Length: 418
Image 1 (cartoon, rainbow, N blue to C red):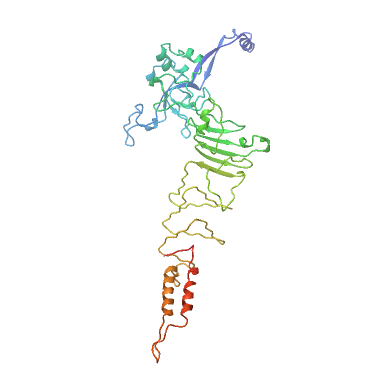
Image 2: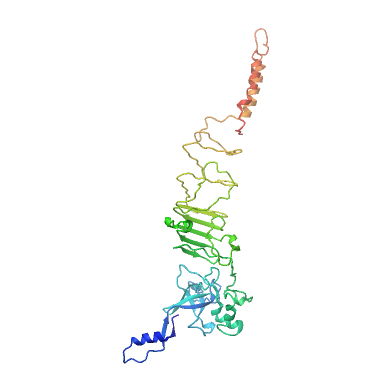
């Protein structure tokens, strides 16, 4: 809400104002009014869900309650509502509805009044911290209830150290119903020209160009977008508020979109030998690196395509599977090579060559061996009727037996079928 204050002028300011007045003008005033359109306000309550008691009832066919209250706050503008009873304090609407930063209880925001309504903007960075920026020094409800001295009663406590602390054990002075302060959340290290979005919880987006070229930044800009969800847990050991950089290998999940000479520090944790392609020695130029504990891609309704101008490589230390309800096709104008300990194809029918051509069934090697050996045994014992009586065994008998010994090399030691 807009408010006025009177500013007392010093001698030089009064002398300067008097020189602007005509000789018939009265003496220059000792103070002047100052107008402020924006005002800091302490957050007392944040409406976060449909069960909040501050959401008013409606008599509407569309809704039983006014759910537009979700996201609003009750606050105390510290100048214009210094002595207003808590029950009469204003409810403020987010000034922007598409990008909203929800404050915590006891933090301060900037409020303004337009067209009879209060609006609030983002929280004040009172201590330039990411996780919390509360300041009990200005919280009338807190200071008056804590030691009975009213506003400013916490001055002595804050002068001895950082006022930004939740050492009070009472739930009345918590920052929310379930929010827990985390002093291990570190800010990103800034680089020239950066635009960063940083949450209270260790997730961030950086729009930058220079940090990976900081050794010699004058080589030019290398635009990049670095997205991080959950900071590297090793940073918990750093000093309070020590600035850190994104770590594509050890942050919770990362998407790094880089360009130019900006080189990613990504290192794979897969131990499997890459046999078919050589992984790049320098990860630079226009590139996207995605690294996470689990990665799931889904095209819910239509096709999914992946294209690579050069090599496409999939490497895993575990199981690699491909399942489909429809056909699977593999097409290459060159060799199709499979290296493995063993290869098994389990199918109702297997066609080698033309699809659905069943003119030439494949011979079963072991069955054919047994049949051929039996045939050669019968041929070696042939007896033919003659005018003089049955003939003896054929003279080719030893040759038939020699042919039996030559059958095993025809059987493959690597390819088997049923």
